[in-house]
Image 1 (cartoon, protein in one colour):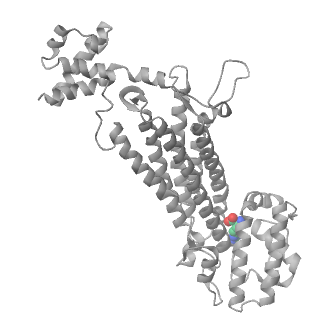
Image 2 (image 1 turned 90 degrees about the horizontal axis):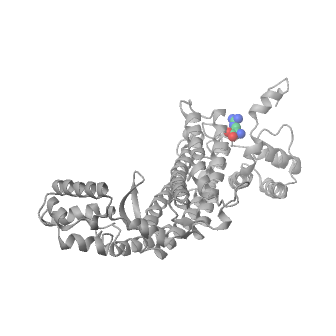
Length: 455
Ligand code: ARG
């Protein structure tokens, strides 16, 4: 660089370079350069012959990068400079014209938004696969009773299909968030120049069109200073990873001998180096364990961006590793979660045994009293006493004798015994969004519509 007399210090190079991680942006960088060059030629800012040379040269550069034969220089600070340097080696002057009316500031913002848009679309597709796996598993277990929990204490019985669909809806919301990320990454930064715009009569609409951007960023300063779309991706990813961690955590719990509700396929489990009997649900544990790392990427970028004066600051180079790590982590977790669910086996008997716990019918008994005119609060108290009595005596609720029962309430008789014996307290949850088969049928229809809308 002509401005400098002395070479860069090794330590400066070490802290300043981003090449080792921003290499992955080369497809986006080359696409952006081709669109930019086509625009320059169409506005006669460079010649048609220059454009041909640039396109031919960039195709060669891409070939080298694809093949892994591209030779980086010690002076290649980032992928943008490396590509331009190589292009100029290959085609000379035409290559040196490519950076006309462009800065690395609008260039990198464009590359990152192209990349973010693509990864958001990919995340959406992976989420759809996971939603499909959940929906399928929910369908094939639609009438398998199990306890639902609050505070990890048995609360009320539900169908496994209902429980699995709870996750389906979480991921459906994640899908919506990634669709919004695509939108956030759809205003073209290129053409903003370093910060103030360009000294040439450029055609930004044309570039937007070629690169698939829905619009042109309206303010050159905002265009180069903006990384909101990365924050949006990371925020959507962090929430999605949190959902995956809850799914993973439940599968870990359910896989334990104590629960015995499910078993992951051999392909998704590991053994122990010492204990021959072990089958560990590692993938599920890692869904749980990797979530904070995605959140860390989000907090990293908030930290980088907060308080930054306009416009571009080198701090912003720190957006990339956070983004890339989140992309890699989330995409792997989504694929692994879907793969694991596709082969998981549930244990109907263990779940049914647990769901047969009559204590899970406590609310249903209270509601029986409510139907007979007892105010709910009072009914709650009566059933509480019944439960305490049963616990103290070490008996089931159905084993409480008629006399004792009468002592708690004269309104509990045959219907109390019928309720406990037919176990019908799942099917009575007929409210919209409830766990009864009838409500679940409606929910499956809505899930099918949601899947359709996501695809
Ligand atoms: N490697 C830089 C980044 O990732 C590219 C932009 C450099 N711009 C500059 N003015 N130095 O942010």
